[in-house]
Each structure stands twice: as structure tokens, then as C-alpha cells.
Length: 111
Image 1: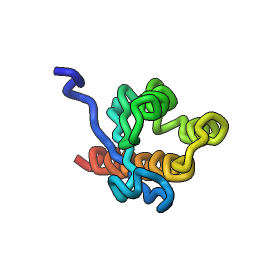
Image 2: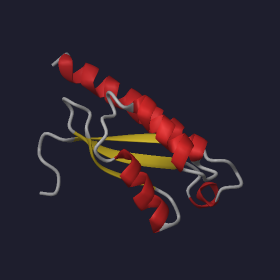
Image 3: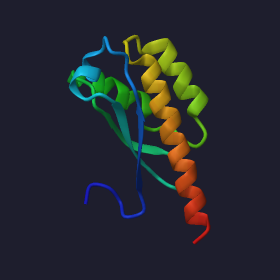
């Protein structure tokens, strides 16, 4: 098993600009994050970019950080290191993933 039983998957999504190839290919921009639920630590990440180097770069930005605690840091790193048409959608994806994570943790705490 690649991911331990206790991990969770959250997906963030956003609309890219019409000028971006992702819009023409997928219509939406997605990022999938495998997390440790207690800490929000990101164990793996992938997004639906066109080029592998972009996908790998995005993964390196996210892996090891905590979605729970490091969202401002992630946004700052995206703004200062990721210069693509999908910069704003990537930030929006991160925020959407954060909201989904928080909702999942709220649901789990009610069980």
C-alpha cells in the first residue's frame, strides 16, 4: 500500500484563465493532496498540469508542509516562485483544498 491507512485525500479545484492550455484540455485546474489528518501534513501532491516539470515543481512546493498550518506560507511561496498563468488558480486550489480538509476534520470530530 502506497499510502498508510490513516491518510486522507483532499482535492482543490479552480478555473484557469481561458488563455491557459489547462482550460482547453481540462476546463478546471485541480490539485490532489494526500494528508495526515491530525497534522494536515502533505505527504504527496499532484496537479493536472500539461508539463511534468510543472507538476513536479508544484509537488515540491506542497509536500512536507501542513495544509492546516502553512496555508499563508504556501500562498507566499506560490506568489514568489511559481510564475505561470495558473498562479492564481493554484492559490485558489490550495484554499479550496484547505476548506475541504477543514470540513472533513469537522465531520470526523462529530463521529
